[in-house]
Length: 124
Image (cartoon, rainbow, N blue to C red; front, side, top):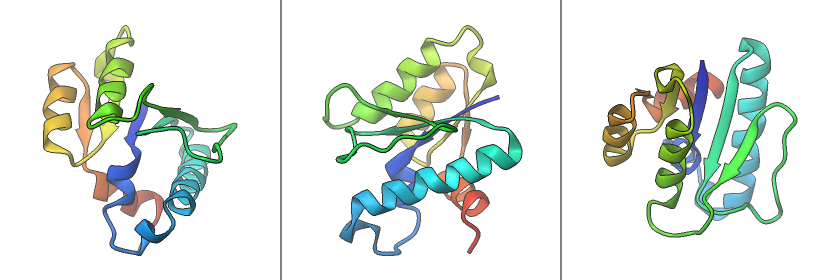
């Protein structure tokens, strides 16, 4: 199973002040995804709207971003990643964005609610 995470959608599930330091929130998400991926041996890609500055790297999680920052650019990149798979039915996308969820389902992948993933990787 391949997980693709709509990064800012997952980050935004909790009003924990993430908007005051977006980069710190992005790093924290990748750190939690790494811990989860290692524990569950999950294959995870996290997709940001634009490249984090400074860059965030991981040896466990694939950190990706849209080729150009624009409205829905991360959504387009997520759908592109699904379309590139020979078996899109083996992809789970974590998002609560209804428009993206419809596109994900149309591409043959499964949608997993962003808040449920956040609770899974970062229990309250």
